[in-house]
Amino acid sequence: MCQGVALGDCEVLVPSRIDGVSDTAREPQYLTGDLSEIRPLTRDVDTFSIDLDRPVTFDSGQFVVLAVPGLNGYRAYSMVNGAAETSRLDFVVKRTPGGGFSEWLGVDRAGTTLDVFGPLGRATWRPEEEKDLVCIAGGSGIAGMMSIVSHALSSGHFERHRGDVFFGVRTREDVFFADELARLVDAAGGGLSVTVAYSEESSTVRDPDVPGGIRAAHGFVHLVAGERMAGAWGNRTAFVAGPPPMVDGALRMLIAEARLPASDIRYDKFT
Image 1 (cartoon, rainbow, N blue to C red):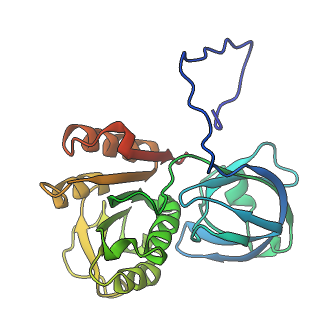
Image 2: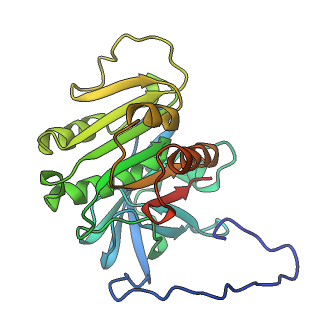
């Protein structure tokens, strides 16, 4: 519904069962923050930060919505940084033709004050969840996965459980966060693997710009995840984020092939 626009009168159907908000849920707040650290990561992906007017606490995998002066509506972006009380939020954004915020954003926008509302979203991870993790991300969908994996690492989760991250991009030029992911793999001491899946690459030569410790594969990321994880799903929580076709494909694979229950699959579609 955050992407919907009502074109006329609407009828709202309320389900007979409504789950209440848990006692540990983060209450969203209205905040303001200043843009900073705007820089390109690839040919069509930028990173930026927002320095908030006061600290906020969020769960790994959550997002906020941003309002930009002169642009109608709010835009939703997942936090990259790990969950904690913080006055700084880090994001990535994919530049798309006609995209209001992505085309507006540039280094000259540093210092601009934005309206921020959040945290929001239930595709989250908490330290008390004693399950292995699998994260399947397409493009900028890796943002929330970085937060989840960083939090799991700092909580000692990979000392007792495994984590497998599958990061889908089109070509080698589209890889970002490679060094950051490699550091997470190294710090996890064998408890974490990261595979980059190239959907439009045919070469099997290793990409010299991707650090050691990160595996490479060719194909759509959800198919690569299904092949690499075959027979090893076990007791896992799955997180999926990215473009709608990729998310839909991953959900079908997780239900039909991995046989994971719906309660153990959490996802966000990026449009």
